[in-house]
View 1 (cartoon, rainbow, N blue to C red):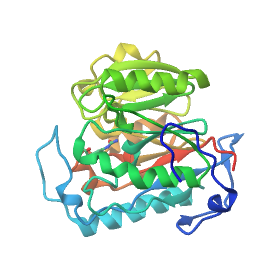
View 2 (view 1 turned 120 degrees about the vertical axis):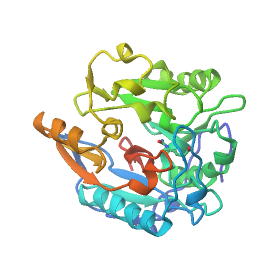
View 3 (view 1 turned 180 degrees about the horizontal axis):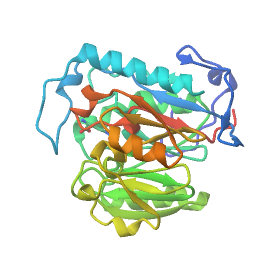
Length: 292
Ligand SMILES: NC(=O)NCCC[C@H](N)C(=O)O
């Protein structure tokens, strides 16, 4: 079914496969705008989760059962706020597979399949290719010698910031440019040396303001509108729609700051994933531009 290097045409009968889709049929409104879809890819944690990679933090014992409960609550929070969750086939042999954000970058209806800078994570893309094709995306790939983790890609409107760091190389950045600039994006490369991924350091609010924790940023001046937040995990928000922001329970001061600015934090405990350098963004991939 998957032909590398070609844009895929997926038969309608495949797109109707909704076995692992939950929350389907709910409203598709994003703030004040109608959007074609509000689907989110998620992937069940591997039983080997505790073996996941750690790079910038000390290894701590991970409670896999607690992690599963936290993952279920995270998925439920997405559904409660109107997102259909689409479960990618589990990859039980890949400890880090729950961090599905790193495997694919969406822009418009194109799914760019990543090629992780961590070799041990490369097999994770297999089920993801299948999942995005089933949803009607056109599929493209990062090719050797390029490397890219989805966590290094931050979209703010049509500006795509790509972190050049431990997991994403210059060829990977160039391949993102080649894939998305013809579709109307502008790709901006950002140096990342202090944290795992660009989105470990910064994400963006619904109005486009980039938020981050200064000690983890190489060059805050690269972001034209920037708000400093008091906690590392406060840098991570998932836009749920309107003023609602999915955030980690480990950033209470940032939640208070953002609530005071008129946002509505929706808080989830993802402590077991944080032990593996995960954050709220990395547990899902939102697909907002699919007309299916
Ligand atoms: N996008 C993300 O923030 N991904 C987190 C990945 C954590 C995983 N343990 C890793 O090192 O690859």
